[in-house]
Length: 251
Length: 246
Image (tube, rainbow over all chains, first blue to last red; front, side):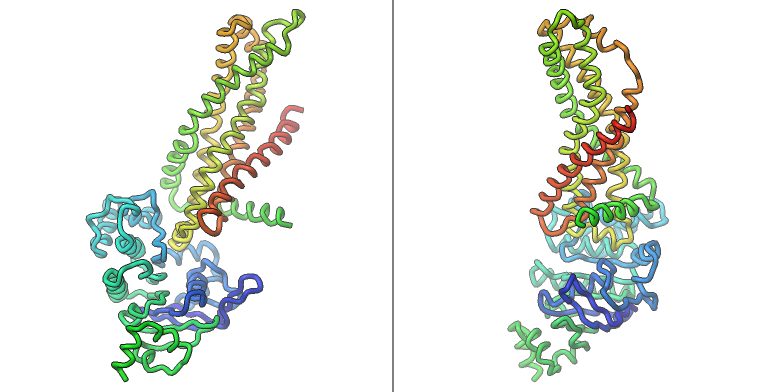
């Protein structure tokens, strides 16, 4: 479980996050939603330790990440898988080498076992036939899958996914969402997804966290989301025509 | 204040770079790759520059000291001294700062803006060590070879220009090259080369590592890498010369 306690983050004099408190449960898909620029990516970067919070704590199974020694942080990070919005694949490495990368850096197994593991991960995300290609030679959706394969290579306890559907067509988005859901169930990971895609939220979220005006304004399940009378939340989620239809249907 | 901030952050980054590597075998493999990319692939430009610079030094020396009172072999002697003391270690390092420094800053800067460095950090990899240490070791190991090759080619270029134009005989030139040779000047040149190689790799890596923004900023980092590497090389050149030759 990951717990965020009274987290504040400012850049210079600009406050981005104010008193955020949240718990992300094991085996669940927790989605952080909010408008562009609302601070959800900053929150994610504070949680994974790329930014140091101005105040507050991030606890991984009870241990404060930012109070750990550097070596301890690196040790913990080997248990984190992350899919970046830009995929962040190493463009000079092939698809297979990208998945092999964390294994070669940290795994204590033979080269043969590493190859088997990498092929298994690629097969898991249904992209095993593109293993010799470079990231630039495959589509955005395939790159996302490679990113997921790399993220799960080390059997992560925590999975972070930043805007998994950005730049993808609706069909591919569903495939990626399903994959995130399946992997969370399979590996029992604490999965945190940052998104503003309501289709994704309605598809796979167990717990939803709405960030607005620097604060965590609302949290709850999908059912609670549709019935919420929070004005800012409603303005955000019912901005899309599909969601307006969903509301009509349920009311 | 800004300068102090950068100096402080540079040394903090170096602290990260020289912390314990995760897998030595992977670092070594990367070092060999970097030696090829940053060293071997610079051989062409270094050779070309050295040959022509040696030729120019010889012709200019000859035309400027054309006196019956000065022996012919002085041309070869001057070509050797200029080449070993200054031209090969310093001027070639300045050229390499342009070629290698911009490559390093652009590569690391692109990785930064494409979140690849963040990806390394999230995986638990010491991104500074993984990306920068092999470049430092590679340049520190390969640049002395490049400079020694440059020395030979520059002196050879001088001989070629001198004998082909007929301004100096082959024997006089070779006599000058061998005259009063003190091997310490080669040691001095190689010490400078290693220091300059470390300057090029670290200053350029620093510029790339702290790039923020997009492709335009990567370009700015590359330019800064070359300019600041050159400035630091010139300062270090003065300091080392004072320390090692006085």
